[in-house]
Length: 186
Image (cartoon, rainbow, N blue to C red; front, top):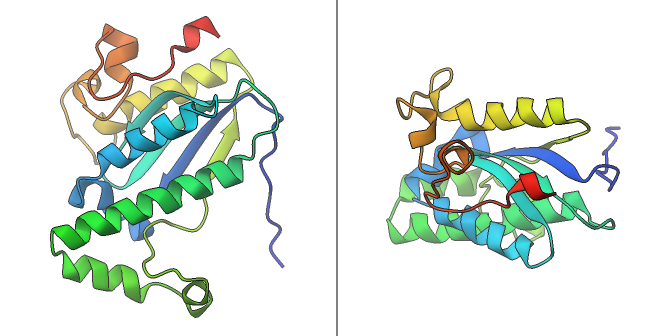
């Protein structure tokens, strides 16, 4: 039997990652980057802050800050994935991307279908690491911001040019699509 680890409020900051099903480029194909920004606005209303982020074509990295105890990280990420999944499916339907929709529909298990799930948009789990030091924070911040130019990606020549990242804000003071909470004042 697998043990399910629950993320508590032991840390005030978390580095979180979640991925589209089978690493499909669903954020890109559905042009659904704005759904992440909508989620950021939603969590800000609950005093939770995105400090840094990068929205890749098939996954999201974000550093979340929780100024108040009592949050449920599993629930926050679960709700985010559910909200974004609806938006992504709607956008795929509008674009008549039937092959992708069929694949995502076929991936739903019987157990998930009984719960009403129609498409599998994200991988089941997510990764969350508590940020416990400035050194670890800076390591994750640099990892997030350099993601678009690392490994196979090469999405831009300069990581500060990637439009779905907080890198330009922290490096140049320029907001591209979304201004994260400025952690320097925490």
